[in-house]
Length: 255
Image (cartoon, rainbow, N blue to C red):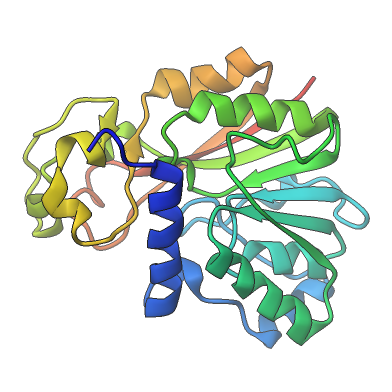
């Protein structure tokens, strides 16, 4: 399975998620949400449940925001309705089409770009005030490359907001985890491709990676960022929910 192109595989897998219509992260926001955002009343998430503190955001009117690996017709349209100049960058054409749907329905000006988050060469250095990256680096093999590119495209004083899976989520046997049993089976760093094999590939689901904290947090620092805030969040309806958070979100600044 070493010849699998992860970007191509996950692009097709996410396109299928959109077509299936059941994945929460592929469902565009409705007009009521956009109407509230136009008035400055909005909540968005980097993880699953906990909204981002409003103190994390700079003034949004006129801010240049890159919604990185953030397709699906959710965060990008909300930020655009709140007054930001939004570019949504995603690996999945069908996810980007969800943002296009909301943009046309609500008369929002959103730039849509398809690509790999580890290669933002389509953007010049210092193009954005904010890089907004919800919990999507789990679908990328080289998270350090993502941080380096995010740092490059941000202006001085720019903000990286990102949601990450806590590595502890990936140490358990996946099938037993889904059935409420926490049995340690894997080491970190983790890869679906290496740990679950061909039978999992046959399901056509997006492939995930459990990155180490050294790469998730230390990688941001190594890229040049200063992490200034952090919060944790739980994954609902799992055996881990009442024991340990599955997610964390960070706010980092390019000094």
